[in-house]
Each structure stands twice: as C-alpha cells, then as structure tokens.
Image 1 (cartoon, rainbow, N blue to C red):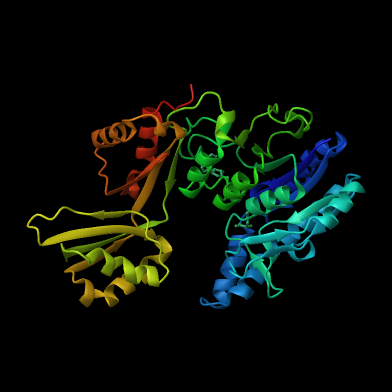
Image 2 (image 1 turned 180 degrees about the vertical axis):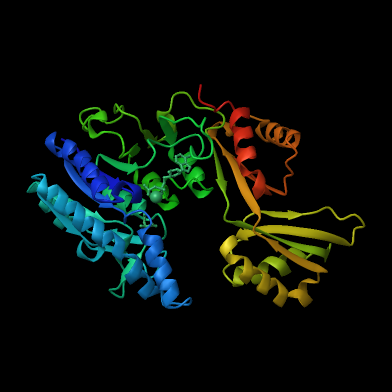
Length: 421
Ligand code: ADP
Ligand code: ASP
Ligand code: MG
C-alpha cells in the first residue's frame, strides 16, 4: 500500500465533467488499496476573476482581504471534489487551510508555509477517508487566511506530501509531463521521463510554469518524489501506485535526484519568461561608486534586479548601464532611479517591457564547454540581438526583443538536439 498526494490543477477541475474525471484517477488508487490526500486548485480562470474583482473593489486593496477573496476558489472545488468522491462510494472530506491547519507566515499574497499539522489527517487515513485539501491557502499567525502566490497549489501538495511522509506526490495537469520546453510554443518539444530537482528548479524559476518554483524547492529539500502527469489521460492509462514507485507505467515525468538519471543530456530544457522589463541609464559616469548609487536605492525599495550589463566606456568617462527587473516593478523602478538622478548622474532613462528572457538549462553544462558560444552563434545567424546575459553553473540566460521569442526558443531547441523525432 502506498500513501499518495494527488494534486489537480485548474484545468483538471475546470468544470463538473473534469472534476468527475479527476475523481476517477483517485478512485483507481483507492480501489488498489492506496491511501490518498487530494489537493485541488480553483477552477481554471476562477482565481483570475476573483483577483479582478478585488482590483475593481479598489486598486490598492488590503492584502488580507485580497487573500480572503482569492482563496475562495479552492473552497468551491474541494467541496465539489469531496461530494463527487462520496457519490462514487468513497469516504471523503474537504479541508480548508485553517482546518488542517496549514500554518504560514504573515506575508499575505505570497505567504510561505511554516508547518502542516498531520495528526488529524493521518487519523482519518486509518479510517479509510480521503482528505480533499484546498490548495493555495493556509492560515497566517494573525489567524487570517493567507495565500501562497500564483500557482501555489503545487507547493501545498508538496508540503502536505512532506508532512505525511507520502511515498509520492503526483501533480496532475493539462500536459502529460515536463517537456524540453513549453509544448504550447514548440510542437516538437519532447517529454522528459525524468528531470533532476536542480534542473526543474531552474526551469520553473526561469519561466516554465508547469510547477511553481517553491514547490520544487520544497520537494528538493524534503526529498519528496514528484511526478507530473496529465489528468486528461484516461484513468486506466496509469497503473495504480504499487511496489515499484520508481518506474511507473503511463506517461509522466519523475522529478528526482540527479544520480537517478542515467543518460544526462548537456542541455535538458529551454525556458522563457516574458515578465521581465529592461531599464537603461544613458551616459552615466564611468567611475567607482556609480553602480552602488544605482543599485543601493533599488535594494532599499525592495526591488529585485536580475540581469545587469555595463557597456564598455569609449572615452573612459561615460558609459551606458542596462539592467532588468520584474515587469510589474518597472514603474516603481523608474521612480526610484529618477529620485536618485542627482546622485547617480545620467543623461537619459529608458524603460521597456518589450523583452523576453530565454534560458537554456542542463546539469551537463558543468562538465561541457562551448554551450554559450554555440548559442550566441545560432542566434546571430537568425539576426537576433542579445541585450544582456547571465549565467550560472547549470544555465545561460539571455535577454532579447520579445518579438523573437518563438524563433529563438525553436532555434535553440533544434540546436541542442531536443526536437522530438
Ligand atoms: P495547472 O493549472 O494544472 O497548475 P499550469 O497552467 O500551471 O497548470 O501548468 C501547465 C502548463 O505549463 C502547460 O499547459 C504548459 O503550457 C506550461 N508549460 C510551460 N513550460 C512547460 C514545460 N517545459 N513542460 C510542460 N509544460 C510547460
Ligand atoms: N488557483 C491558484 C492560482 O490560479 C493556485 C493554483 O492554481 O495553483 O494561482
Ligand atoms: Mg500551476
């Protein structure tokens, strides 16, 4: 018998038909004698609608009330899922974050999980009851509902799996696994049967929204075995969890330790993020202390800077400086830099959201040279200009004009031999 956490995302619970279908996946496991905790998202699009209403109520709303509003979508689906499971003859009960309780910190809208109480859930498992848990939400120290940030149900599922010491956490979504890149923009993307935590972490944080970044972080730290699957596959396509949890039949991707992957590619995947904004300061003095005068005030304003490029100065006196921030922070960033204009000293300030960050990721880069050189050459041949570059041990990210997103991703996908046959 295995203990499983099964998470169903927004498209997997988008309407009653989808919820019924998701419930059949749960039934498959229950019928095989497994114990299940189910974590659900809100119906697809519902959270966006709730968020829109909060914004309409007032653009500058209280974060605690925002959480009260946006957490409600999951309450609906957890109740519906419990009812559907009961109608199939399965003992099931819904759980909101505060009932478990799933404790978070006080950062409303982007709260972090502090603790998940498991005793009551464990007791009910012993009685054969399925726990249907609302994802995305918990309870803050002030006793108010807190949400975990967009896509946060993935993190709820992993946290519950860690707390229950589950054998596996299955993330059911609308694709049947993690692909070499977003299959919606590259039809030739290939499903990876396994991906390491580290690569998945980079993929997620660099734009692949198939898993929320924090969920991967948590899975890596707590050693939770994560499986990404499609809820749209017929339930019988997957064998119920049994003796061999490593090699489950049926399409999916296992997120696991690097040493569990036999054939490691140099590049495993490509991600893109359109939520970057570029800021350029023209003609800043090329002297010590200038970078500090730019980035100091940004840090004080809590603005995260991602990529930074300082051009070589032609005359030794002036240079241009470019950096990127989250697009939602662009206006705030420009205000801060304008406010510090006298101290910094620049001739002109420009901001643009018309950029995309493309990243190639692979643990094989640690031991292989030339991945970047190959990338720059291929993009140059397509006439794509690179505006900024950052690297780490296992990834290279570049900033380009947004209009070239698809061309660049497809070019690199072919270049690193990731295309499906
Ligand atoms: P859910 O509502 O189930 O949480 P999401 O929309 O958050 O689903 O995530 C699934 C989506 O992630 C897919 O529809 C796909 O377009 C996108 N995606 C982006 N990059 C990848 C990738 N590398 N592999 C698989 N899916 C990806
Ligand atoms: N419903 C929430 C969102 O849309 C959480 C999730 O789907 O994971 O962001
Ligand atoms: Mg998601």
